[in-house]
Amino acid sequence: MSTGMRWGVALPLGLFLLCLLSFLGHEGHILGTLLTHGSDDLGYYQFLPGLFIHHDLRGLPWVHLLDDSSRLSLFTIGVALLQLPFFLMAHTACLLGLATPDAYSWPYALARGVAGAFYGAMGCWFLMRTLKPRFGNTASLLAVLLLFGCTNLYYYASMEPGMSHVYSFFLFAALFHTTLRMLDAPTSKRLFLLILIATMIALVRPANVIALLVPLLYRATGSREVLERLRWPVRFPKGFALGVVASGILVLPQLAYWKAITGSWLVFTYGKKGEGFFWSHPHLWDVLWHPWNGWFLYSPVMLFIMGALVIMAVRGITGGRTVLLVWLLAWYLISSWWSWWLGGAFGHRGFVEYLVFLAVPAAWMVQKTLRYSRAVRYMALVAALLLAYLSIGLSWHYASPWDGSEWTMASVWREYGRLLP
Image (cartoon, rainbow, N blue to C red; front, side, top):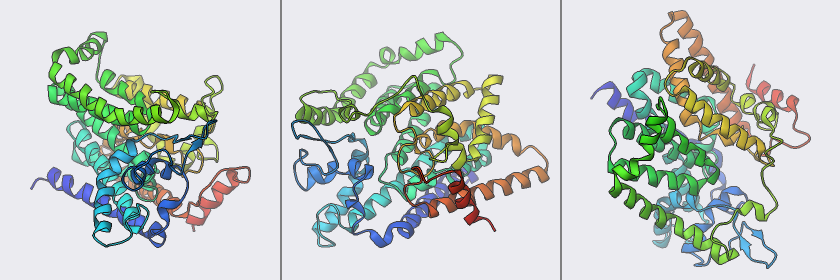
């Protein structure tokens, strides 16, 4: 077995076990009550017990009450769809007598932990496969491990697997991988997969549709190539038609739910709660540096990776400008949201899924570093290990929420200080 094949097996398996063991170490003592906690993760999950246990989606527990007392979930069904296979395994085991088949007993909580570990590991696997043809095994592997260990990706894949971000990370990785395969050899099947993945991205987190600029722009050198990609539905009508049908099947339950609750097929659910975007007053600096989840503050490795991305974009290196454009749009979108720090979170969770595209400058940076002297490589390794230690250590110390008037820069330094001698 070649080195690449060995890592193709060892990487996802190792990360899966690491995430699952971390989940059990962090949440194992409360598995019996974990799923009853009222927060966003319950908002994503509640469609499954509503459908399979209570057979009623009108009485979901984590909702916004409308003026007519209807109960509207602010969340979409994408996460529940991805959790469904794991939920069904737990439900079957409970029906056979393992525990109470109520969708909230410990096997269901364990299933959610398994789901987060699975999608986190498979997202990293897709990502390494995507990077390898361009950057080689070593740089690709190190880049994926750098992003996994030195950012909050580890936290959301293992300690909060009920949130949407690890599922979006997996879908972004699948989108990126399928995009590059489509660019290398366009086929009807790959167009079908792109449509399917794009639909799931929207169903998990609608704002993430800006990721669809990647299939449109990545590696394009001019408008002619962009127009050629827009012609894919014409070139591959079968794949396009099947993709549209599959997309409709996935989207219809969401539309039907909105129609049943509100009377409208399309609903901006957060608008019903009076929440929205302030496009003219984005908190651009705060999203990066504020003690309330500032991205660079809790994931300092991204300073180096973003520096590499800017260099790639300025030099016109393949992928640099597209990735920078997508990140800038995501930054502006997140910064314009009324709750720009995204509530109780470890680090800025809004960027977790965008780490997939930022793996390109990460791998480019690692590849360049590997060409330096042994002393430089050792210093880079020590720095990476220190950043991973701090990031993983903060993950274990985190106790929501690290925000509010009492959470200041001094609070952040205090938490870092707890990890240093």
